[in-house]
Image 1 (cartoon, one colour):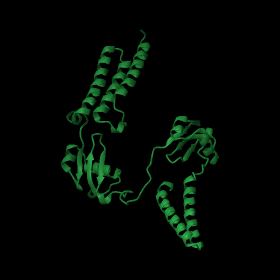
Image 2: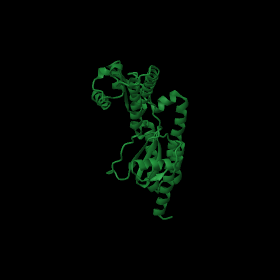
Image 3: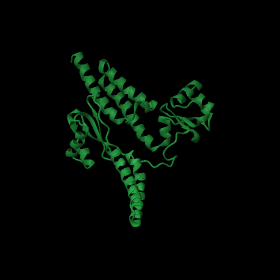
Image 4: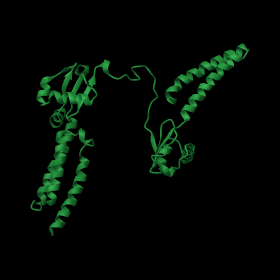
Length: 285
C-alpha cells in the first residue's frame, strides 16, 4: 500500500475514533475539566495524530493505546459517580483558602499558591478585600469560588421582600427567516398570529434572523440588517396604562356622582382596580 494512502486511511479511522471517544467523555466546558480528564483527552488526540503518520508503528499498538486511554477514564468516571473516594482520587476535591475572612496559609502552600495569585483570583470575582470573604474554595478545575459575608452580598428581590414575576425560557419561533411551527404551537399560537405581530412592527419574516416569544406572548426579533431599528413591543406598557386609566376614571366617577350608592360602588371598584394594578405591575414593567 502506498505510504500516502496508508496515512489517509489511518487519519480517517483516527478521526472517527476521536468522534466516538468524545461521546464517552462528560459534556462540560473545557475550563471545567479536571486535570485527569484534560490529560486523557489530550493523550487520545496525540496518539491518533502520531499513529496517523507513524507508519513504523503497528496499527494494533495504536488501537491498544487508544483503547486504554479512552475506556479506562470512562470506567473511572462511572466509578466516580458511585464512590466519593474514587471521585476524590481522580478529580480531586475543593481546598478552602479563606474562612471567616482569614486566609488559610497552610492550604495555599500545599497547593503552591502565592498570595498574589490569590488576590488576582479574588479581583477577578470583583472582591478587593479579603476580610469581606466568608468562604473561598479552590475547586478541582482550578476555579476559585467565593462567598461574601452576608452584609457585602448584593441585595436581591427576596431580601427587599419585593414580588417579582416568574421568568420562563422563551421559545424561538423564527430562525434564519423561517418559521418554526413546533415551538409556536407549544405556546398556543399559529402562523397567522405571528404574521399579525410582525405587521405591527413592520417587519417581514424573511428579514428576521431570530424571533422569540416569551411566556407572556411578547414577540422580540433580531434582523439580518443590524442597522434597522425595530420598535420595542408596546403591549405591556399599553395594558398597564389602560389599567391606570380605568382606576383613575373610577375615582373620578366616585367624585362626580351625587348618588351615595353609586359613589360607594365606584369607590369599591376603584380600590379593586388598585389592587389589580399592584399585582400586575411586576408582570407589565
